[in-house]
Image 1 (cartoon, rainbow, N blue to C red):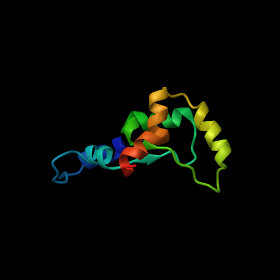
Image 2: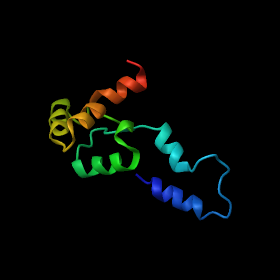
Image 3: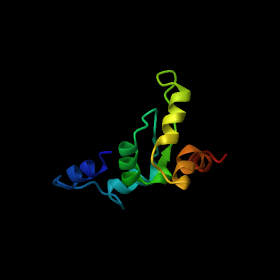
Image 4: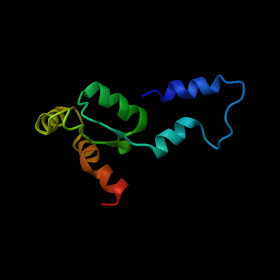
Length: 98
């Protein structure tokens, strides 16, 4: 994620945008990030640290990645059971009111 860099560059501007909160706040509160077939523990840990586990959704970019392989990779990623559930389905249930 480049939230820090975007915030840092905006802060260096002669005049910051007029907003109630910093841009990073709006990015963290209003956007979701998907795994999109990228199943690597360090990368996912970085995203979770940047936006929080509640804003990460499991996804797969089929047919580029195979469903079985992606599911197996996701199962091997280092996550707590609660975080795995949030990314796998809980966050989507909340977002889409399922």
